[in-house]
Length: 249
Image 1 (cartoon, rainbow, N blue to C red):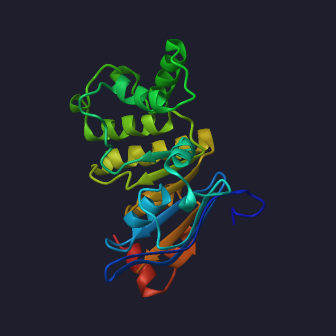
Image 2 (image 1 turned 60 degrees about the vertical axis):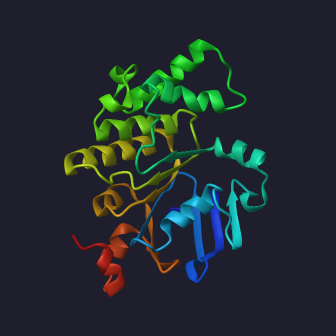
């Protein structure tokens, strides 16, 4: 297993979250080690979205701890949390590009928000160019999001997430809404990014092909708990009916 002798960069311990009578997370645990690609699969309503919102500090769990690089974010003030978020890149399910901004302006936005970022034009231009080169879309720099295909928008969103060189990447359904050919291109791009930057990644997905290609380990989330963990091969070969259901085409 990949965890041996590697530093833990992110850990969730005994996370619970209840909304009224709806028990969404029921003692969920997760450990991410440096350089790992951890895929989390779960059916709709299993708690994936709530887990991600807890992970990035948008909502607080009712119980449990969330530790990122040794710091518990559940007790952090907003200012401290914003600084720590510079270490995390997030690829939203719908790309979430700013429609009124060009590709260049979308990529410059996180640079402007980072407090220690210089306004030096050359540095910003270099980072934007490098990020676009990583996703193979240098020619789109002055286009508007509306001029891009869905797959291109997803690539630009990935470039924006990478521009601050985060140590941790979180991908929320990176292939959802894409045709099969474009989805395969995105999967291959994510794999290449992982190899190049050695980021520690969490990938939330329903896409079995995505999980097969890029996961070093998987967690299956059922009813707010870790129902099963292991490699793709281990889980896909399981005889457990609940586990087998995740791998049906």
